[in-house]
Image (cartoon, rainbow over all chains, first blue to last red; front, side, top):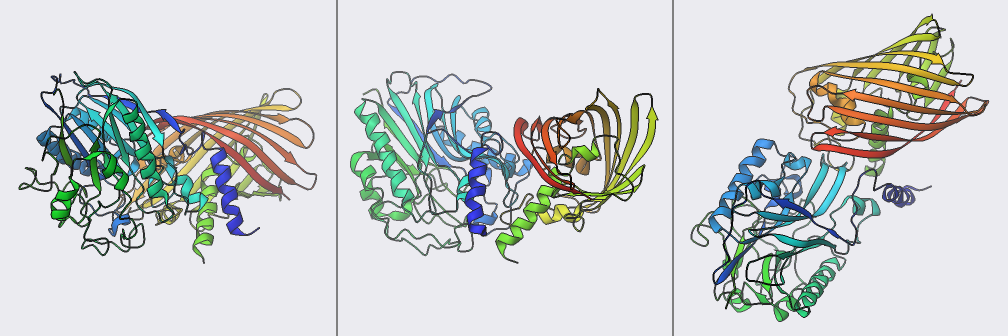
Length: 360
Length: 254
């Protein structure tokens, strides 16, 4: 029998034993993992505005350059992770969000020395409650020394989270069945936030596909739009955020970025040509914390990603709502001048904040 | 060598390493010794040769290059209903562990780790008695001692079966006790139930418990096939976890 035929058979065997061996699978919809801070900091009802932040924290890797981004590092030491997490917690304390949507959060991963980063941020900020949805889970990934991996998205809040669920998104299909078995499995994390004075208020957090050329990314964006449409139709108010791995409409540079890594995980540089309209439905139907006209006038002010830690080069992170943002409250915390604190050394993404109008 | 072939070779070596201690419990768990001049070997089980009626030697041929290893098993006779044996093994797993520290598929360890020179001594004692016409009972104990030399920068391997079997390579010592029942269904089919409790001093996980259930068929010509499951529950560097793993091997006795 030829090797290409053996791989699918091996993969099917793995899938059949998944629940008892590697444990990589998820249900279409399953409860999120809930967290509580060790010490609860009572939060008053918001007055006039609710502070919302989305932040991809690169699993506490800061500016260590890993093998998948043209670096030579694989796994971190406990000390490295704790130092980096303290840097991230300091940023969160400075911004002081009421709701924080995190992406690339590790909770039990060998690469980040098994530091539970959700619990760390709850215990080192004024946020009290958390919900976590894994996007990449395996009891062992026998590749590049990854080992045990549990990484995903988390929503942290000053107030209780209810009915938090992980909603599975479709998987990338242009991979071998064996790679797909161990690969990331994207999801939406939705949770109702018990904000005093706000009924039926939801957060929606996700990190969408980065490297697919098979239509997975627009499909996932479409399902995110559907999810938000359904919440809107049900009478809910929501804030939605995350790393959508897509550029906004009006982007001047679509490829050949200054921080390009062509020898990393994707094996090529990022190229967003042909993806210019991927986010149109989101911008057309909901209110963005980044006004699209403001972005068109000055792309760089809204850049939220930097591959090399030298300069911010593109916008990948977003906040949307079906309510109203406080005018001009949207901000990418790039540095001291724009956001009040230096952030480029603590993650390859910058935090995005905005204030949601409430109680008016 | 193509990438796929290379990965398969590494996988086979790794499989051999992982299953070495559990793939052939019929050979290693009881106080039984091969007859003088007799060989046995499995896909995963070691190549074993009966030097005399009370002494056998074994090595894992697939991994021998990477994991220089051999073991002697000596029968010490009987006392009452019990027969006694001990097994004394030596291995140098540095080259094997270094082979697993690699980029891409098969990278059990990160390639930037530094594996020290490690020598390990593995000593087991076992006592077996008959329990009726077709059933045996074996009590066993095992101590693994290891010493490292040179620069060392590598972490635990948090996989079932492997975590317990590599703990001594990190921390110098591991030990277990086991209780094994095995018997015959028919002249050509047999069964085995083995319970092993590990103590792993110096590790975060500290303990592991393994329960093996297996059946085997052996032809008149000495070919055998084993199939079963291993339930593993225990501590790892990240916490407690459980797994139910398949167990299989093909063997030959000649």
